[in-house]
Amino acid sequence: MKFVKQLTDAEVVTLQHCMLNHENSSCRIRAHSVLLSARGYKINQIADIYDVVRNTVSKWLDTWESEGIIFIYDNPKSGRPNKLTEEEQQKIMMAIKEEPRSVKRIVGIVYDEFDKEVSIDTIKRLLKRGGQVWKRVRTSIKMLRNKEEFIKSEHELLELQTQHKAGVINLEYFDESGFCLTPVIPYAWQPKGETIEISASRSKRLNVLGFLNTECNLTPFIIDGAVNSEIVISCFDVFCESITKPTWVVIDNARIHTSAIFKEKRLGWEAKGLYLYYLPTYSPELNLIENLWRFIKYQWMPFSAYLNFENLRNSLADILKNVGTKYTITFT
Image (cartoon, rainbow, N blue to C red):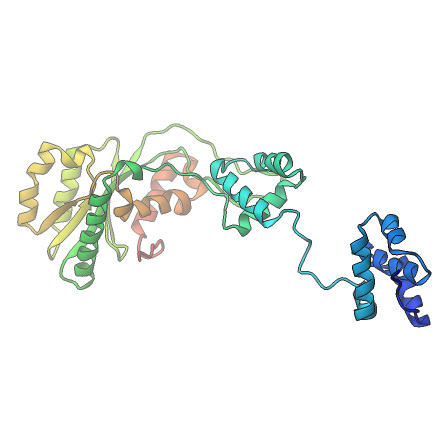
């Protein structure tokens, strides 16, 4: 038979106080078990009272004999014990890759496969610890492009950028973008229970054509209505008159950039020191001016711009005028 040694009066008082008052049920159980053993209760009897196996009670009594009153109390913990094992957490991370849109579905998987109930917030915390963030899903055309051509173009552009920084050439990025009264404002800080609403109305389109370099120097052209090859040629003609050294212009393969009348102008521009660098297809991220359009639409354009077409025009003109000073982008 195994019983604890005779308790001192001080130990009895401490154990009784812990058994009656401690906020942790595990501490109360261990204190009572030691008191029961001291009163002659056998290990099996104590195990039956608390519905645990015999070895658990035996270990409690052995630890009491070796550690004394310290054994009763839990060691400090960093937080609430995890409901999910490491293996279960890994399965959840795999499941979210298969269906990244629904946390509720993951809660159902945990219940069906692990027989555990967890909250949506628990799953969200697990996903954040695993490096997941909730953000907009974007469409991509990467799978359509030729990977070898893309890598080759990256290297060629890096060489041109090196020459640009050394002052040997100018490197400009050209593109067009359109703006209208349909707002592109996906997120904003808003008071709880309220929603910022901006009227969306159909309007004609303001098209902006621009030449941008890595120093954030912009040469813009605002066009009312459609843009065709003739308009693009006119912008290039104007820009060509301002260059002072050999200038390479990065451009995509849009139809208005590859039309017969556009290509006919190429030799004349080259004679003035302007050379075209055509990007491989489906490679918009290599054209740095794409970043400018995103900044204007998603960050710089004020809410008031969408009240009417005049506001849109004035706001856009102000932004384009102050790119590089009030509005800047850092290219790495």
